[in-house]
Amino acid sequence: MKLWLSAIFILASSVSMLIGPHWINPFHMSTIESNILTELRMPRVLFSAIIGAMLGLSGSVYQLTLKNPLADSFTTGAASSSALGAVLAIALGVPVQFISVFAFATGITGLLMVYRMSLTAGRINPITMILAGVVMNIIASAIISFSKYYFEDSLNSIVYWLMGGFSWSVGKE
Image (cartoon, rainbow, N blue to C red; front, side, top):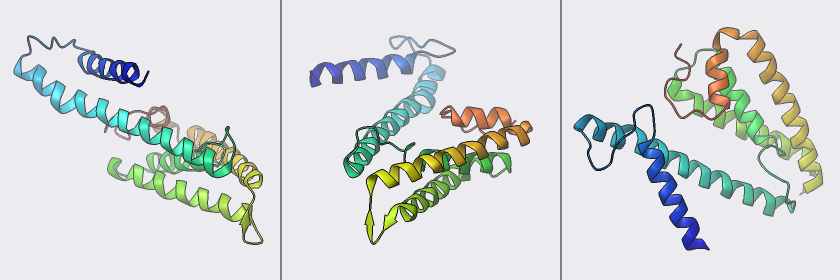
C-alpha cells in the first residue's frame, strides 16, 4: 500500500509540474520551458508537498497531545490566530517577506494564550484547551471578517493568502 501511495504521489507531483498556463512537454523542452519548470513550478510543487507533510505531522501531534482525534490547529486557535496576523500584515502594507513572520508570531501568541487559559493548578486539561482554542478561533475569525470589510482595498490579497496561495505577489496590487 505504501508503495502505491508513493508512486501516486510521485506521478501527481510530476504531472502537476507540467500543467499550467502553458503545458510543458518533458520530451521537447525549450530553454524557457526548462527554466519555468526548474525555477518556478518545481520549487512550488516541492514546497507545497513539504508544507502538506508538516501540516499532517502537526495534526497528529495535536491529536496525540490532546488525546482527541478531532483536535487540530483550528480547535486550538493556532491557525486562526496565525491567519489574523497575516491578514493584519497584508492590510497594513507590511512587505511580503514579513507576512509569514507576522503569521508565526500571532500564531504562537494565540497558542500561548490558549495554553494559559487552559492551565489550572499547573496542569492542562485537554478539554479546557480545546474549548479555549475554539473561543480563540471565533474571536480571531471575527476580527478577520471585520478586517476584510474595513480594509477592502486589500481584500484580494487577503483572500488569496487565506486560501493558501504560494505566490510572492501577495500584497502587491
